[in-house]
Image (cartoon, rainbow, N blue to C red):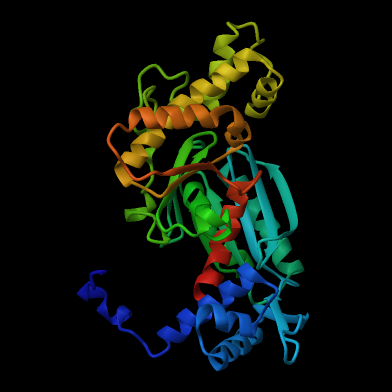
Amino acid sequence: MKRIYLQKAKHQIARPNTIRDINKQIVLNYVRDRAPISRAEIARETALQRSTVSAIVDALQDTGLIEEIGTGDSTGGRKPTLLKLKTDYPCAVGVDLTPRETTVAVADVSGKVVEMEKFLTSPDADYMSREIVARVGRFAEKYKNNRLQVGMSLPGIVDYSLGKVLYIPYFDWRDWNIGEQIERETSLPVTIDNDANAIALAELWFGEEKIRKIKNFVTVLVAEGVGTGIVFDGQVYRGEKGAAGEVGHMFVGDDAPVQCSCGSRSCWEAHSSEKAIIARYRGRLNGSFSSGSEITVRQIIRLADHGDETAHFVLRETAKYLAIGISNLIVGFSPQAVVVSGEITKAWHLIAQEIHTVVEDQIRRPLPTTIISASSLGETPTLIGSLSLVLAGIFASAS
Ligand SMILES: [Zn+2]
């Protein structure tokens, strides 16, 4: 049972509406997951009374979250009216800032992207503020409606509750007030979070069904750095000032191929990030790869797929260090699943065995079996993360 903290008691007293709010959330999520679905089916599956379901459906139709889409097959009596999410207007603007590029996208309540713009990320914070505010402003003007909100995902430390960006190590930006600037210029509410936390939220609401059903899991984003998000008891655990999950700096071994963003060569990130994959590949080629030319993780995976031994070795070596970190997370948190996202998941068929072998080897004592899987969020997990910051709020509150 959860402890009731007395200093917060006035916010926790059960209100008469609490049960109705919970039922509303359940009905909305049935429509989201099982559409097209009828009122009778929802009542049958939830064991809520037909009249309760009907009243909630009316309220959800009034707020514009769901709509009727004709009739289904009759099981005897009158043909049932089917329901689905109302997706004919956008309700989320996602801003996804990564060290390389920034994406601003508009999506409907189901998470389907309606329009998207991309541009290269600049190390100049003022320039980035202007570009982001201008794009969000254009979308706000074009898709004007009273439900539109902004969600933003960033590779750094964010105070989620205050909506403040505290530090972005890649660009050494401190106290960047991007949230305030967007709100001031567009009048849209803004939610900001760290990219790894945003991905954790996206897995919880938009991930594979087997993950969405789980209450405790950890997400690992392999990108420029390595970030983790923690889902505890069905919600993202952010820690004091949003700093939880900074385990990219845990020790996993000496002599990493690159320096970590903190300067060390012993961190998980220095052994397992995309930078580490590229540095390993270059190192194995003994300089035969000309230093001026760029190679990407995607190209290394493609080479491995075409039988390039060096590329295959480099991916397996990286998987080994990734797995050491995952083992530590499993020992520390005992999650039901660890979900990996990022470009490296395109090589899952080449590295999954290595990851499982190393994890089994590292964890010697018997522990509950943890699922280790590649994310199903696709090419742009951080963009889905930014949209989830808005959409999860809608599905969690059903208002
Ligand atoms: Zn570090």
